[in-house]
Length: 82
Image (cartoon, helix red, strand yellow):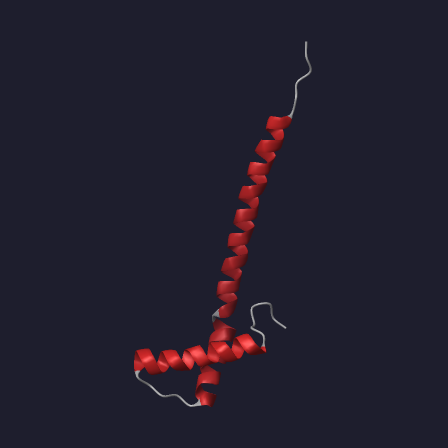
């Protein structure tokens, strides 16, 4: 399974939300199959981009925390007394 793909319950909820969005915002009533196909396309074409963005942000945050951790460790070093 691809890491950006939703599990069954999350997928059903997302499809339901997409159908509700189409009704509410676009005043369009799509059939179940059409909504599922649209969702599949979004999941295949767009979800990996968002997933990769999240990974990049996590990498950046981890590097920043590591830098802070390194500075804190440096401040703990003790110099020998003369």
